[in-house]
Structure formats: structure tokens, C-alpha cells
Image (cartoon, rainbow, N blue to C red; front, side, top):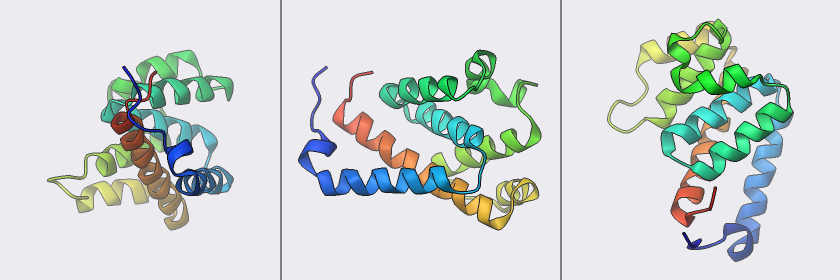
Amino acid sequence: MTMRFNVAKDTPQLYNALLALNAAVAEADVEPRLIHLIKIRASQINGCAFCVGMHIKEAADDGVGENVLHLLPVWQESSAFNAREKAALAWAETLTLLAGSGVPDAAFDAARAEFSEQELAVLTVAVGAMNLWNRIGVGAQMPA
């Protein structure tokens, strides 16, 4: 598969803006493990092989266990994830699968039960940014 375009090369100002957003999310006051998990899960849902591979490697390098990474697609049925991680993953899935259903009050209430408003805002930006990266990766046919 040949890449269709290269955002870094073709629009460096936009690419740098996305990198700055990623850096701001990384510096925010939310556990890096949660950010790793939602990046991988959104990428799995969106079918972005490049991003799944990259973020699994980053998560593993940052100490996320192999068992957790293997069980991520079935997180709802797994005891490998704590309540906070499950809430972050549910929020990521809700925002990634937004079309048609929106964000039901129950989904917000479940996320808000685990996270402060600031943490929920950070998670929302992280999910949004990851979905944008996924659309770039899939749209450009970035090789895994």
C-alpha cells in the first residue's frame, strides 16, 4: 500500500500543531496509562493499524503490561482493568462512536463518577486528538 499523502511533509504547520496538542495532553494531570489505553482503543475502533502498532509499543515501553494490551479489545469482560480505566475506555468508545447516538447522559454520568471535570476535559481532548490522528493514518494509508 502506498501512502496517499504525508501530513508532516505536506502541511508541516498543521502537523506541528497536532504534535503540540499531543504534548499538552501528555503534560496534563491524567495518568499516562489512561492516555495510552484510550489512544489504543480509539485506534482499534477506527481501524488505524499504524496508530495501534505505535501506541501499543509506546504503552509497553511505558510499563503497561502485555496482558492488559492483549485484553484491551475485550476490556468490558476483563478483570485486568480497574474502574477508572474502564470508565476512561467507555468514555473513549462513546466519543469515538459518536455518530448516531451522541453522548447519552448515562455515559457522561458514568465518566463523571470517576473523573473530575478537568480530567474529563483532558480525556475528551485526548480522544478527539487520537481520532484526528486515526483519520489521518487511515486516510493517508500509513503503513503499519
